[in-house]
Amino acid sequence: MPKEMVIFAIEVEDVLTFGEKLTPKVEAAIPKVCELVLQELNEK
Image 1 (tube, rainbow, N blue to C red):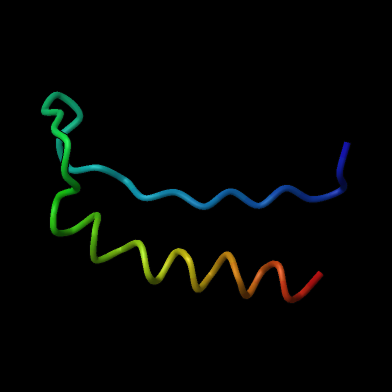
Image 2: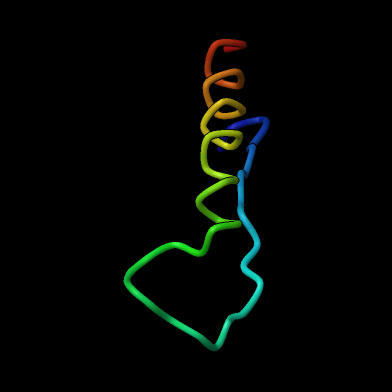
């Protein structure tokens, strides 16, 4: 097992409604999460 595990998540606003497209808030969060993942990978 690794000594450390990092989890990145985007919380949804409504867990009962599903669709084929991302909500605007989730879509807006993706670039920031990608940036954080890349930062984490570059630190290793």
